[in-house]
Picture (cartoon, rainbow, N blue to C red):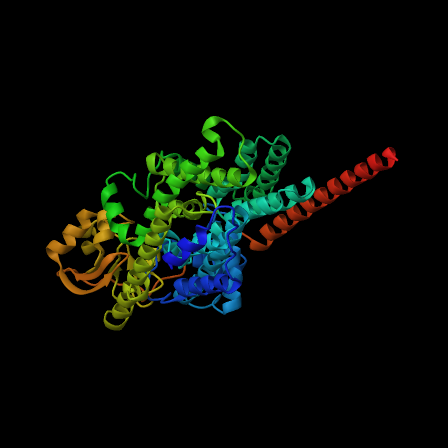
Length: 555
């Protein structure tokens, strides 16, 4: 493939590159579908966030409540949970078990990820006339470690990345459209993107920075107005919380989020106190190796594109170069800030994956140098090998396997779990979940079964810690263990001498917030969309009448 690609992207001078055949694009999408759908249930153990988001989706569908507990979901906006709720209704999992609904929601994430690959192709076509480079960008996206990791989950990231790419693509597509059309459409879609994940503000600002790099005042005013419209759409989120009597809770959650994004509060990622950054990097290296390589190649591409475009010489950039440079600058800037000061976790890193892919392939013009062809081919091969190792031939379902074992052999016995109680509750249908941080207190309370994960203990996730791990290993006996790529191992230990405490056989589902109506939010969002549409239509009508008046006056 690399030899063919080299021939196609390095035509003789003065010759336009030949377009790639349409069936090749369809083939790449088929490869993407396979990459994200193969072994979807068994190759990736689930985590706490997937459980919470799935419960929120089920509550949307069954109880008209955007919540996973007794209070509204305010740490993230509601739109993703509305999509999950609709998906559970379509798939018939709205009233079923959380585990079944979670694995069903993963298919929604996989679908969004395939659409992300399609949008990578559409965006690449806006940046280059060489169809073979478009195909190369799509293939690089398919094998990107970060996109593969999060694209196969029930998390927000697949939906959010898809929404962010839609904003950039529409901004390019409507670049020459009338101002009311651009502002209305791009502003509304940007607002919806912010209502999926708020850090997408760095993607929403891409057209603004692109206009500044072009030094196009009219386009800059248009893009800035679209951002204001987007903020008005996002404003339905806090307004919804206030109208439901949850304004104080909304602000409390966002105050915590602001502290996390600013780096004042570190609860996950590389910069977390008491956690080794090199350990975190080493734990995830094989999963994300192709993503790391793409970040490096994309960073070089960004510097080359900015230099060739004249940015370092303070010259205005052309439209395509300005958009791609803006996308790269904001994405890499956000990533660098997160790594140096902010919340340097895997989720936030994933948002910079697509710009890195585009820059790796498209920053060099329509004709790739041979060394870049070799580098792109090497990264693609590494991505394919990592996918085969992490997805195709692996088994990573230790949580459900351990849940089945405990249900079959230790029904009604309380279990002190590793990480977080809510993650384990769905698979322990016959065991009461406990989350003691102190092993001695757990034993005094009558708990004799403990779940351990070396990774959870090392990273201090939830109630886990090296101290609890040492206590259990010192006084307990290993009963059962299952290997896990995500958690290293899930181990069941029994600590002798403890008396079984009286607990209910199972776990109550988290309560549903009564002041988190999904219907009310949809009504607010619909009202905002109708208002924006009416304003844009009126603006467009007035502009057309003025244009007719000027033409009539010339006659």
